[in-house]
Length: 301
Image 1 (cartoon, rainbow, N blue to C red):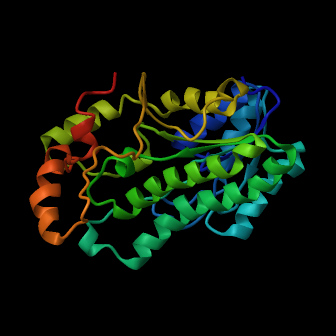
Image 2 (tube, rainbow, N blue to C red):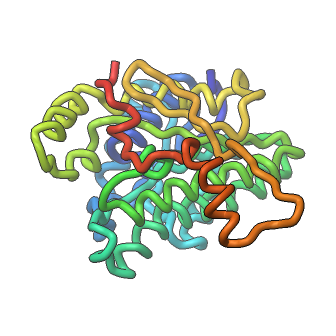
């Protein structure tokens, strides 16, 4: 479905990124496997994860090159995109998948915890997307696939940095779609579910959480790859600015912020009429304070 296309996948050395890179190559794409090889919290580097994925792709008869540059700095991200152009002559798709975790309850979160996560996942997605945008604009084609999370779309405990970055990706994706639609460029999001080193790092705090972990371990990263390949293909030419979620063999189209209900007072509003009029009108429409497990309360099918 992506025969001959050139695809950059960030964070492709492990987990979901690895699965996406392998699937892209299997379906005919030439792939830049980008991975700094950092620890889960973002420190250090290791070239072996990206190198191993490239070796797997080549062994299966595909084409791939490794990139070890960081997405977190703009100049470094420039090298990632340039690697695709230098190696394969063009670029057709960027999958913004790179991410790190620094989970901590909000009142104990440090500025460093916040900056490290946001710089990799949100700023990193901007860096790669902005660098690719110049090529997409000139060739009047291209697409972005951003890996968001239900932690941002719905909510999660101890992940203010991660959740904010992941929800920010949705706004970034929508803005790209609006600004670049005139150049035939698309931008969509996937909220994946899989057992990876990220999810494995989240401790089970009770029996219910342990049960969810045991079930999650059966949901492999590969379940998320087919949708990413589809979104990168020409078959998805009419799909733009959408948010999907994948849970094993289930795919969901997620809602996006739109007005739910409105009230009007011709004379305007005071704090008192907000309490007397607006609150009773809106209260039954309030979105409940929920976490992902509350909304997706069933096991992945």
